[in-house]
Image (cartoon, rainbow, N blue to C red; front, side):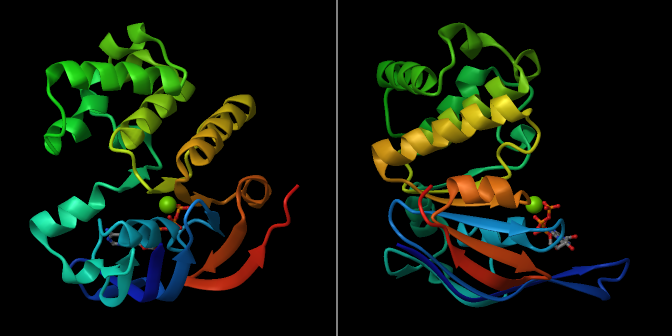
Length: 235
Ligand SMILES: Nc1ncnc2c1ncn2[C@@H]1O[C@H](COP(=O)(O)OP(=O)(O)OP(=O)(O)O)[C@@H](O)[C@H]1O
Ligand SMILES: [Mg+2]
């Protein structure tokens, strides 16, 4: 379903752009329908960069990204936007997904509004449905992000990510800032939606034990490269 081939990304930094960081260095990766692939590696190994390339939030310097056989690196503007409806990011920090100045309702509604998919009453119905599905209450919708706990925030981020019925979600350390029991409930929630809707996940984490619990397959990343691949037997 999703396939990256020969992906490479070099960031130029330093005062005069003279320093080069090879963040992703020749990575090929494949994710099937309904599958969870965990991407594990230490900080700075290129996990988030690879995840963002697969969503085409960052354009690779080299390589291709295929979604249902369509080469996304060849698409621009509206065409890319249309394919990207089906791909979502649950970012490392909830602040990246939820604008602090907006009520939770508006953050969850934003993807629906951007793509002009529903009218006002359909929007309300859809948001109530999403909020229930992720285990939040209607009263959370009128609050601002700083008025929610870490676990509630992450549920709101998940509701937003699900709004457009995605088929592929990059979960970038979705539980790294939560305590263990909240972490477990968020992971259960993600797995529930996978069963219900057949979503594919790229699950980024630095926690190998967590990866073993959630993933069908584990990829280990180091210095921009995939250095090991293993299949998890069902536990
Ligand atoms: N926009 C950018 N400009 C310059 N360098 C960047 C940029 N984004 C990432 N990098 C660099 O690329 C490398 C890989 O970063 P990346 O965020 O992908 O790592 P990561 O594996 O997600 O780390 P972490 O576990 O800490 O989130 C790092 O050296 C980082 O400093
Ligand atoms: Mg990261």
